Image 1 (tube, rainbow, N blue to C red):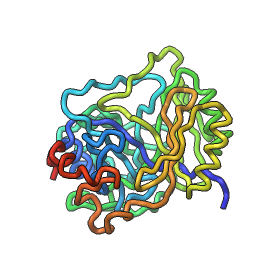
Image 2 (tube, rainbow, N blue to C red; image 1 turned 180 degrees about the vertical axis):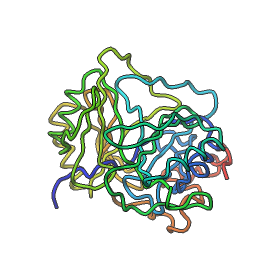
Image 3 (cartoon, one colour; image 1 turned 135 degrees about the vertical axis):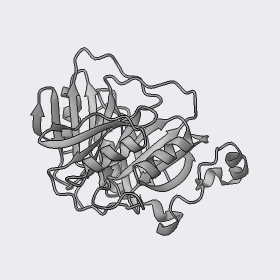
Image 4 (cartoon, one colour; image 1 turned 90 degrees about the horizontal axis):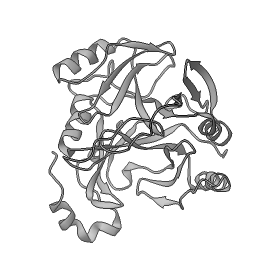
Length: 312
């Protein structure tokens, strides 16, 4: 098996109120709520996972909802600043009407790299885009009563990183991750891998005078890239460690195994395995219905549950 990065695995962001976050992504955007667990490093806080029916890599958006009153994040350099979702051609009018109905802040549609997109903000100020991809996207959408497959999100299209200088980050993408520069519009550089058809794009925006961003409420915490298994994960660990980037040991996140490092531009990157997946502790039909705890916290379940707000 070749040692390849297979596009985006998941993206993790920070939110405020847990119930508001759950309602927005599961009800207004219509993503499937696939896992309700806790932050393994802070079990007093939820960790939510949203995605397609089974939580396929490239569809997984996760949140740490830290609660009301937390500090607001500040967009700037050294961070991921936009999350792009793929949607079917002709669906943006549906989404504009839906955003109007639910008082979602959005901008008028625009074009980027020949693709029509709609930018909007979630309740915490996180910036997202719905993109009518010019690349065929045959991923199976998760449908709800209100959002059918003709308009539903398919999973990630791209992630955008804002940097003062893209050079060192581009080297990681091209020389380590196997991405290639495929297009450029002014100061936006588009990189992609041909190892997967979707969730394959990273945009680097170069803003030399931009102040450093601050990761807090309404901002992306980290971007995770996908590998097939543990053997390939550790292959990349050796490469990144040799570059002196301070990569972590392998960490068991219950549903995947991970490494973390901060790329030279300042964005926290993760590399995550496909295995073992989200059905390791729940059947597909039951995903997201119960609070799932890792073994180290199971003896504290009653205490942990008493500190978490009810969301559904």
